[in-house]
Length: 310
Image (cartoon, rainbow, N blue to C red; front, side):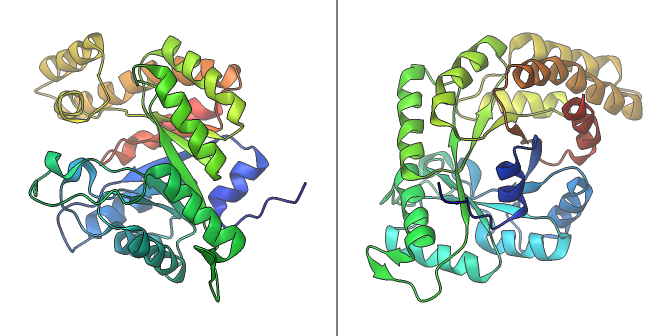
């Protein structure tokens, strides 16, 4: 078997089989990335790489490729460039992949993207020329064969490509088949949507283990009750359990006059929930790492490292 080529720190760590932590950065509707760069610097000691989102929920934000380049350059943190098929056709995406290569991006996450109808420009026409599996296939052709539609690229890209999975999907079987398509297309790693149900997660990860793709479990530590409630209400495909919402609301109420203590209690509550969850999945050999989507919450990463090293 040919030796697997490695183009990034993320690719190297996955190839070695080391248990890793990745983070997530969410640039907003601004041309000034100073706040996001600061968050990247704060999480850099703890994560291998961080996703840079591409207009989540269909809300217009700064271009993800440009943001990925600036963050990686200014913060010194390797990024995973999120690329959706929602906004650009195959020709445009192929050009963007070459552009990302020229800008020093070495990891890309293939995503469908939230529909434009959900966002703040609902009149925008979605493209969906490709789907997330055929985008994986396009990246693999460009990287492995050095071609686009059979046409040679003079200096082809050297980029790792991952994809997403949703353990919360119902029926689960349809999602398993989608992951099979992504695996067949050449997907190199999977990041899952946020999960809270341990038994369902075990069932899902056991089913997709046959594809032999490193899995990074999506988690969402919640820094406040408002964040937890908003995540439950507005993020498609995710339901925060009612007992967690009730606990977070109680923390907000009980410690409303002591914000420092409130923060400490929120951090500890996240630790106490995710420690047994992650530990059980590690023990069963179902994970290659954890993907933390707790945007604007970099102080949680030391706690997560305690969980991962346990």
